[in-house]
Amino acid sequence: MSRFGRIKNQFLARLITRFPRLGQGFIDAYQVQESAGAIPWVKPAKPLREAKLALVTTSGIHHRHQVPFDMADTDGDPSYRVLNGEELFADFQVTHDYYDHTDAEKDPNIIFPLERLHELVSEGVLGQLAQTHYAFMGHIDGRHIATLVEKTAREVANRLKAEEVDLVLLTPA
Image (cartoon, rainbow, N blue to C red; front, side, top):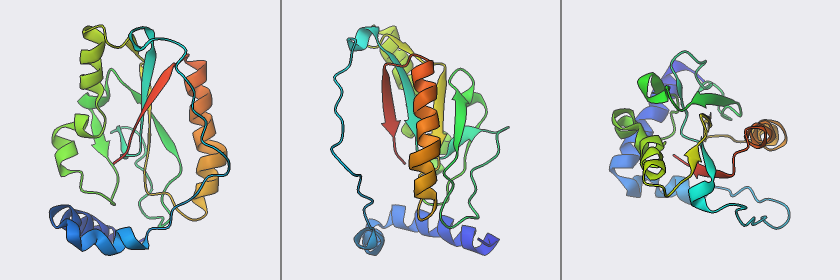
């Protein structure tokens, strides 16, 4: 995608944020990607006050030193970024042209509620937070859906299991 194409996408995202009715055509044209089979529901094995929670987001947030998500590919970027929860807010950026992240850049808790979750840990509502969290770039389409489903989402799920995470909070953007 050209530099002009990226600027156009960023402009449209901001415009639609400010005038939501303009986005109705995009919403009406959206094609849902259906999953095969029933969605599994798993009862948490531990009470929330004893559980370890990790965040997974599609907001495109990442550390500044990490490679930005690929915004040149019109089908998106199915890769993920490993986030250090202790350092993220000190050096983050958002790479995502398909939503207006102006407010999230001022307060990243809007898209990644890390500080709010720390408060729940302090209050004894939540057991603990994982130190490692994960970010995707939410615009993933076409040929990249298979990569997301068959490769990168499975990698993240396996990493979460290896880190003995009990619960995952998914935050879209």
